[in-house]
Amino acid sequence: MYRFLLTPRWWGINLFVVLAIPFCVFMGTWQLGRFEDRVETHREAEKLPDPSTRAAKPLDALLPVSTETSGRPATATGHYADQFLVPGRELDDRTGFYVLTLLRTDGGKALPVVRGWLPGTPGRTPVPAAPTGEVTVTGDLQASESAGSSGARASGGLPDGQLGMISAASLVNLVPYDVYDAWVTLPGTGAPGGVMKPVPAVAPQGSGLDLKAFQNLGYTGEWFVFAGFVLFMWFRLIRREAEAAKDLALGLVPDTGTAPATAAAPADTETSGTDTKTNTNTGTDTETKTNTDTIPATDTGATGYEAPSIPVR
Image (cartoon, rainbow, N blue to C red; front, side, top):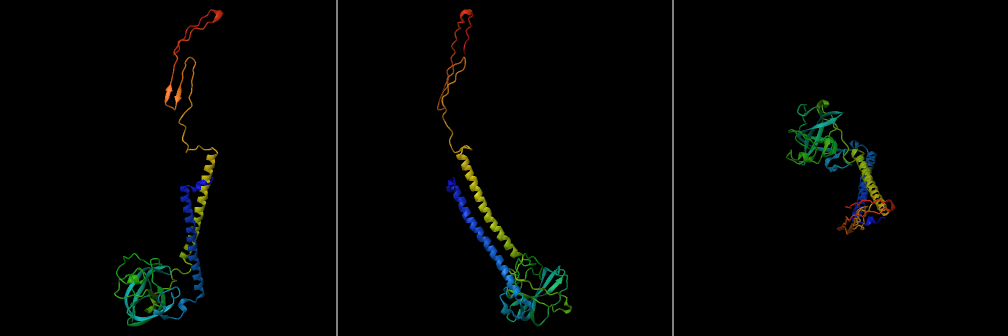
């Protein structure tokens, strides 16, 4: 009954099932592993003290930025240089912009420093000037932003003096000197009257139980569902094919694969008053004979009645 599984068509179906199910299981397991890694990272981060409360270290000692060094206080010394405004940033449910000033260190490279946040629109809101002369800053270390960072704008098209994304890749074409692949946010503005609000440090991307972590968990379920669906459809197709083969064997459905008969049995036909013969040989030769003889009158015996002759056509 199941010999149809060895046909070329079913070989292709079986090969697809054999490859699809392990692939779906592998992808689901991989997504589940990503989710478990994020959970473990979140647990380890909870055991560590707040990065901002740890002792400050020189900037070079904390680079490159990792999940362990992100948020830790870093110190750098230099002179403030170019300044940029970063629009579209929210703080306390209000929209405003960051004030970012590059700090030229003694080594020649510049460190992006977010001195604070101001409400309103860049260009319309007065911005406090940066301190002059040599300064030493201590701020929470942050990794360069990417297109997926909250508030980041990678499309460009901003006016001069504005920046959509805080990263070395965005600044390298705007200034004639090298830029660190990191930035710091100052816990205090240093501006008279505290006009600017400090920007709080954020957790590095890929750590903690954020939205992406639960996306990994959702993808895990999807891949396992795909594997189950492939297996279900495979069994359903087998069952339907087996039932069709069984019905054909019992004669419940016509066998469309058998050629129809090409010859019919010869037939002789006689009608009252007409002698007709039909001979059929392989469906091609047909012979018809019609007797047109006149039937003689019938002797009625003692009645004396004589029936007339009836011509037969």
